Length: 256
Image (cartoon, rainbow, N blue to C red):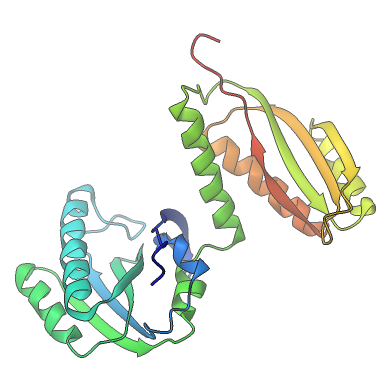
């Protein structure tokens, strides 16, 4: 592993096999994966004892799942040198994912955890995954999920500065397109949705998406509003051969 490696864990909501799911993943690993020294995927799954209608655990079970996770992670790191890369929660089960060189002691490690938590059904398997396909295809967020993660990061920064998310304010958005025609089509659609044009220009240094569009609108900066607005802009840009490049908001403090 690189000495400069520093984990960056994020959690996001998605669907796995058409079922609602929460995924937690170390995003930093995408910069160095696949790690040649750890070609084997290890999966450890724990069946939940109680679930709500969505397949997620009842409130009282969260603490126990955390204890099981801590025990599994500690043993697999100590005994196998395994690298914990992500976890899933869906369809009544918690899945823990690792990559490792050694897998021979896996069954013994899991059996040791079972003895600590006999009321839980734990299963495990190890498979070769040199390209880390499970990390990239199951755990790593797609573009829309990554945008929601970025939204959460920015909203947390605003909150730390005392922002009152429920107060409408001018929120500015950046979009980029391959052609001026695509940019004009999106601007027309957004103008009809009460967006204001801030800037439309060509950036020759941008080889793929040189047509820049900056627009703004009065909106709240709460989770529901931001995710709804950014997903609409994200998809609209994609429909016109472009990309959505984020947003910014002033801090609206309580006394403003």
